[in-house]
Length: 216
Image (cartoon, rainbow, N blue to C red; front, side, top):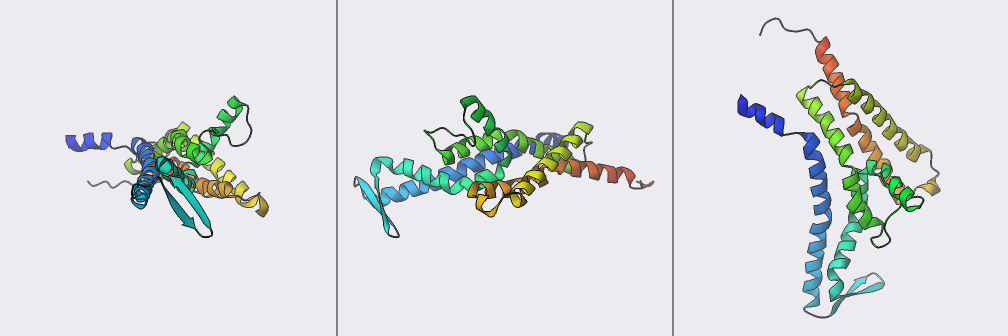
């Protein structure tokens, strides 16, 4: 019994989910970047560069720019999934915009939007992932959900649902861009994730109201 209780106390989704999200974001970029980098190295055969053909366009890539090109390509490919999984990070970026005196979506000019989103969003979303993990812990372990957790779950779930509804129904078709579409899918996902503490509370109430078996 004692080893099982120790294992149960160590394994927590509130700790696991933020770590898994960071590891996934890193692998989502570095693995494809390295694979494409070695592909370019193989195509070059030691030459000073590679010429890639994309339809009617040709792109010359110098050998000293192989990794940078591969990295940029990987971050662009991962942009949608990073945004969807870390949609609550959108609440943090305006803080940087206000500090820098910029409006809208801010990012460092030296990095570009895709790299900045890959670097910042998984970090900004750590509290959200820890919160969702706490809800999953309470749900599966049938722990008591406090009033603060319950109220915050209802508020955050409602907020995510409202943002999803605004993007889905409040924007004109011409206003729908890739980024807004990604956020729409992301906040649909986070409506469910933010609701996990509320689901744990409902399960708790159902357990309380269920008739207890007198025989054990």
